[in-house]
Length: 431
Image (cartoon, rainbow, N blue to C red; front, side, top):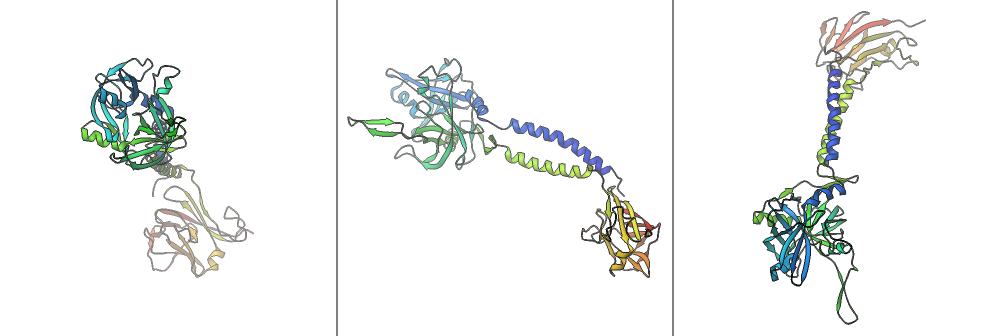
């Protein structure tokens, strides 16, 4: 027979382990979630301004670090004057001063994909994380941020820091940047970009780069002199090369990069790549917590009474003459089973005791069979018979074999069902 209190001790140990674990997981959950401010702080050191300068002036765009050792990615059209006319090509680090100008070397240019890879000697900036979750991500409606150095932002002061704008993914489709260009995956989104933002990353809510900002939709109207005038009448339609185009190109060139196959998910205004893991761990902990509470909960009494003439809760007063079986389960819970003479006389099949809740007297214990034993009267004598139970039935230590005649029980007898020992007492009807 199991010692009472062992299960409770195990439960208390489990509780002591679970509660600190829950606290640690909650802390980790917040540590691995992102909000827009966190994304901006993490990405900003990896963003640079790309500038080409020549005799006719200058033009600029945005780039971002893709690999340790000073490799950055930008748009091919940003550096067009450098390729076509040999203009000076430099990058300006993203910092408060904005004065650290470093010469850049063109490593690779893919015009059809509007991508260019530059190398900057001495540039020591952390690389971004490129999303490798497949061509169907980010999903429509997900939050994205566009990061860049819009030229118009310098109208009221010098541009030293990158700008962040927010939008959502409108759609994903296959297209090309020119009429006869190669087909590639394109993201249409609503995070505003302006001239100067070209080549900058578009990132999801977890800070993973999902694309490269490349174009925006403009409207062209014909002016009074018949000349075309570009306007900004079309709003909220911006395009970026999908990250899958970038990673494929980098692998082909043998350029190392940091990628992630974890899907970014948003929940209650927070974003994380670990929500599925957190959910699974939380479910396991909830199950363990439930089991631990069951083990340490206050012991209750299994008290089975005959529903006869408004029987009193005690099971003795207010009812007719009865037999009372008291003891403990193998887990230490108190048992108090009452069988009245009226109950025994009401049926010819007797009173069945077992772990099945549908038994006449349910007794929940691992050692008790579904239908363990039957209580009857034989020629007016209270008796018990075994119902082919798994762990046996004994009266005063003597086993009762299934199929044999019922064994008599008397006041003071001891009935053992599996590992449950019950003392039998006879109570007379009060006058």
